[in-house]
Length: 311
Image 1 (tube, one colour):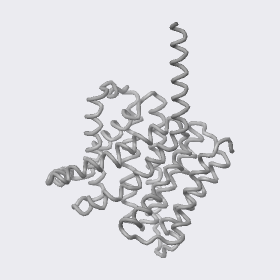
Image 2 (tube, rainbow, N blue to C red):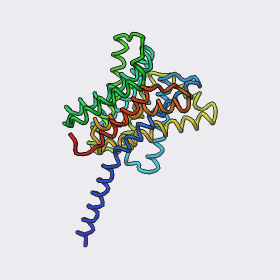
Image 3 (tube, helix red, strand yellow):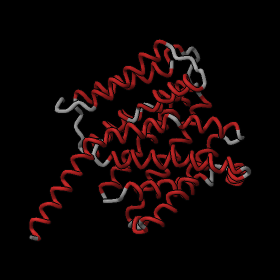
Image 4 (spheres, rainbow, N blue to C red):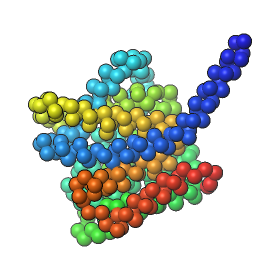
C-alpha cells in the first residue's frame, strides 16, 4: 500500500516537473515583457522628481518590504540561508542589480539611449560564454544563430544604425559594464538555485542587499518623501514594485530552474521589443520599418530558441 502511494507521488512529481519544463520558457517570456513595461513607471517617477538611481533605490526598498511581508505570512523558513552562500545574493543584488543599473544610467549620460540599450544587450552573449565555462552548457548552432538574430533585432529596434553621433571609449566601456551586470543575475541566480534556494528566497535577498547598497548611492530621505507625500504615490510605488520587480524576478528565477542560462537570456530579450511597442502605442513614439524588422527578428529568435532537438 505504502509502496503504491510512494510510486504515485513520484509519478505526480515527474509529471509536474515535465509540465514546468515545458512552461518555463513562457515564465521567462512573461518576465521579459514585464521588464519591457518598466519604462511606463520610470517615466512617471521621473516626472515626480526622482533621478534614475533614486528610482533603483525605491524599487529595491519597496520590493524588499513586499517580499518580507509575503514570506512572514506564507513561509518563514524561506528566510533561512547559510552564511557561506551569502556571496550568491551579493552577486545577484549588488554585482548585478546595483552595478548594472549604475553602469546603465552612466552609459545613458555618456552616449545615446540607443547605444546604451545595444551595449546592455550584449548580456545574452556574455551569459552564453560564461555558462559554457561555468555550467558546461552547450554552444549549439541554433543557440548562436538565435543570439545573432536577437542582437541584430535589438540593433534595428533601437535605431542605432541611424545614429550619427560619435561614441566615446568610456561610454562603450560603461555600457559593456551594464551588459556584464545584467548578465550576472543569471549566473549568480543559477548558483543559488543549484544550492537549493527558492526563487522567493533569491528575490528577497537580492533586493534586500540591493536596497542596502542603494542607500550609499542615493538620497533615500528624498525617495521616501516623494513616495509617501500622496496616497496615490504610495499605491503607484507598490504597483511598480509588484509588477516590474517582484513578479518579474520570481517568474524569471523560477523559469531559470528549467531553462539553460543562455537560452533564458535570449528569451528575455523580448524586453526592448515590448518597450518599443508600448512606446509606439501609448506615447506615439515613431516605429520605423527597421524597428518592425527588428521586432520580427527577435520574435523569430525566440521561436528558434524553443524548437526542440535541433543543434
